[in-house]
Structure formats: C-alpha cells, structure tokens
Length: 290
Image 1: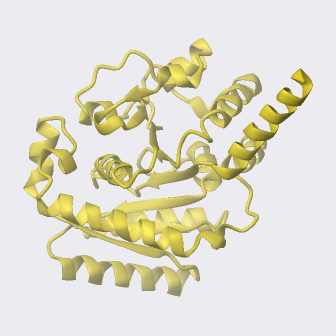
Image 2: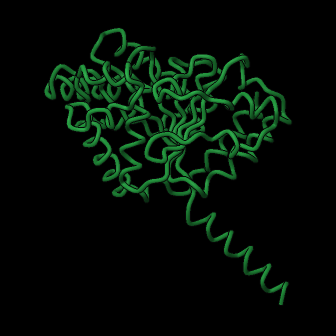
C-alpha cells in the first residue's frame, strides 16, 4: 500500500510539473534610463491582477533597483544565494499585492562567470520555482554583454523597452541585431515608453518594426506604447509602483491595456511554443559552453 501511495504521489508531482511551467521572460533595453525596471515592475503587477503568479528576478547585479522602486530594505539577494548557497525560496521577497521578487544585490561582480558547481546549484534552485509561477521576469541590465547574452538567448521571449529618442531607438536596434545574430527565432516584443501621444508611439513602433524587418529580416511583435506622464516621477519619489500610486493616471491605464493585449496574444499563440526547449535546457547548453 505504501508503495502504491508513493507511486501515486510521484505521478501527481509529475503531472503538476507538466501542467504548469513558468514562462521565463527577459526584459531588456539598449541603453539605461528608458524606464525598463519601472515598466517590468508595473507590468508584472498588472499580470498579477489578472490572477497570474509572478516572480521578478533583478539581474542587474550592483545596479539593480527593483527593491528601491518598492522602498524595501532587503536582507538577502541573488548574490547571497550564490555566495552562501541559500535555497532560492529563502531570498524571495514579497512586494505589494503579493508580488514576489528577488533583489540583485552587490559585491559580486560577475554571477555569469561562476564555476560549474555553482551553475548546477542555480539550475536546481531555479527548477524548483517553475511549478509555482506563471511568469518569471528577468530584469536584465541595460545593454548587452557576452555573459548576460546567455540568459537572454535562453529566455522564452524578450520584451525590449525603448523610447522615441534617437539614441534609444539606435541602441534598441543594435540590441535586437546582436540577439538575432545568435538566434533570429527568439520572440521579441517591443514597448515604446514616454511617447508624447498615442499616435507618436504607434508611428514610432511601426517604423521601428519596418526597419527591423527590412534590415534584419526578422519579425518583432509590437506590444504598444506608454505615455510620458509625471505620475511616474511622483511614484518613484514615493517608492510606490505607479499602477498603485495613481491607478487612474494615463500611464497606469496604458499599462493595463498592454497587459490585456499581451494576455490576448499569449492565449492566441499558445500553440506557437511547440517543442522548443525550456529556459533551463537552453541556459545549460549556453552556459556550459562558456
């Protein structure tokens, strides 16, 4: 009887693993100062309000600011997990509305260049998260390095945040070009932040999409634009996500629209994933090749 119970439990756990696997999303930008972390935070809160279980991992070691945007004092970070071999569950902090996040920390100049033993430890710890969340966001540092590229290429999709400024557009293009040179099939969605109007944001996104198609021969998904809004600055000063700080502001309403658009697209294209390898499988291959 005990053997039957143990077998039943194993089968149940296996069914849970197969039925729910968190989707790993890398949020990227070609340059700093475009609002990437702020959008990651508020977009995640928007998904949470649709009943999704969310985890944000701040991967900008030494420069991360998710905890600062939330006004939280953090005791444990992803750096502690590697240095002290802590279970990943022990470094997860809870933010507003039950949003889970992991702070980046400092004092560990390069988590990407760790030894094989620590890499295996990370794989084991990350695997334990997959059945608990619907989406895991990696808030990557601005720009791209050979080290961070492994995490980006392993993600199931990327969200690029840019602005109408020529430098941000140029750096965003370069970012996509670099990614496409390694994997031109990786789904990339683009958010145009700080648009002066809906029309400007839409037009900039369409032009950007056409340039990518013309010169890189790849299709990117236009997710939408977010307006320039003084609410953002006020919310940052108060260390409160703007979607909570002023729910009826233009930026909050636009973010909610982006979330609805995203969820609609995901529902429509679930079959698109096919037999693509998981984040961990891809990361193992990419990371172990280093």
